[in-house]
Image (cartoon, one colour):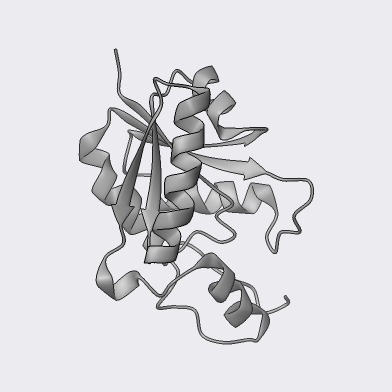
Length: 156
């Protein structure tokens, strides 16, 4: 049986922090699916197709990393994909408390599902998609925060 892990998120946009988490998780799993959750209540800065394209480009040389989108609960998507693991990145103690709660609830709903919490590399712990979006909207330089494959047009 393959060890399949889901790395869920909006990836709006994918950051060097996300890439670091996936890269460090690759040796642990046979397959990692970067799963872009679609939340109809949320307004995204970048269209889904663009986010998928960026992620595919970032991981084009990593055959065990896939990218897909999904609707609904992550736990249900994991069952659909026969994934027994969820990957989440942790930047702070606040992230830990939030992710611990979600992991425990997911495990209660699906006892075979385990969550791997991976600590961010110290030099990347301040980077979040939320803050990067604000820098983009403000016209700032995001080159230190985004993979080189993510090219942002100035028309935003």
